[in-house]
Amino acid sequence: MIIIADTTPLNYLVLIGEVTVLKELFGSIIIPKAVFDELHRERTPQQVKDWIDSRPQWLVVKQPTRELDDVAKSLGRGEREAIALAIDLEADAILMDDKRAKNEARLRNIRVITILNIFEAGAEKGLLQLPDVIERLRHTNFYMPAEELIEQVLERDRGRRSRISEDLSHR
Image (cartoon, rainbow, N blue to C red):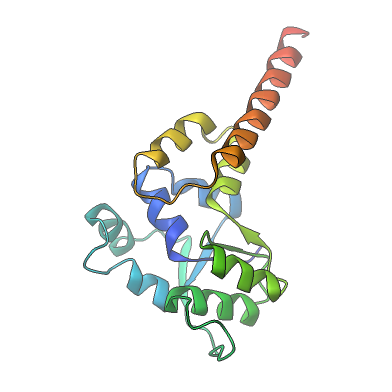
């Protein structure tokens, strides 16, 4: 499975202490050089800089072979390179949360996975507690999705956990 990541999901997964869920879900993640650079910016939290400086083997840095001149200039360099790299490598998906970037990726038929999708998949596999990680994310400066969407994700999680409890009690 080829998964490309933009800066935002990596940044916030590191900040809330859940970045290893990516390895568990996807095996490896590929980022373009621009994302690597963005994770080193002066205003990047030190915790994130330290993580990228000692990045795990499952995080691979690759440079796209193309520049997408037709990508909206309102997107950041990391987002543009992540989309270009996803096209180059015929990626299975791209991890990103910026609305404009997600729309751009979808226009190019690239499957988009958001941080909430990562949380939900991780919870389904028992890798994290969904209410807990959402609460920790709320304590960062992450631009949270609409509360209605978060409640839908939490409701699915409650339903899943309820079914698991019922299954265990019937054994």
